[in-house]
Amino acid sequence: MKLKLEGIFPPLTTPFHSNEDLDLINLERNIKKYNEFNLAGYVALGSTGENVYLSSEECEKVVEIFEKCTPNNKKIIVGAGRESLKETIRLIKRLANYRVDAFLIKTPHYYKPNMNTESFKNYYLKIAESSP
Image 1 (spheres, helix red, strand yellow):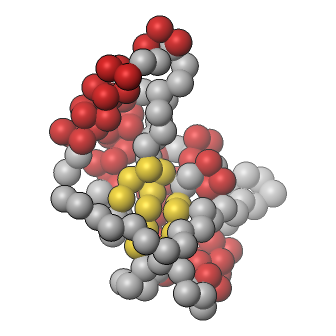
Image 2 (cartoon, helix red, strand yellow):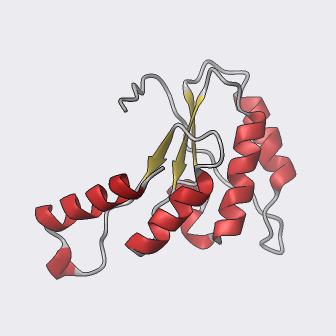
């Protein structure tokens, strides 16, 4: 499947309360405010969206708010990269139940001997083959 991504896709932050719980009310408010602008869509749960600090359950809550608040004419790109291939695939399958147009997957970066073209290719192929 080919997806044409054109236009502006701002990476939105994920707001938190002072006790570090998700602030879903302000997330909803922020998305609705951004909807007033001529944007092609949004990037949710990227590095500015605090993806690496959230549990899968919290990621799901954030994506649920994006789905609820984003008009159908705007695309939603969701960061789903985890530190392991298995967890990345698991999160993608979980979030695929929502209106997600594309997933943003981070490149493996921890083990230097595995940071080569063939390893990266295999990593992304396994994710693609396992994706819904």
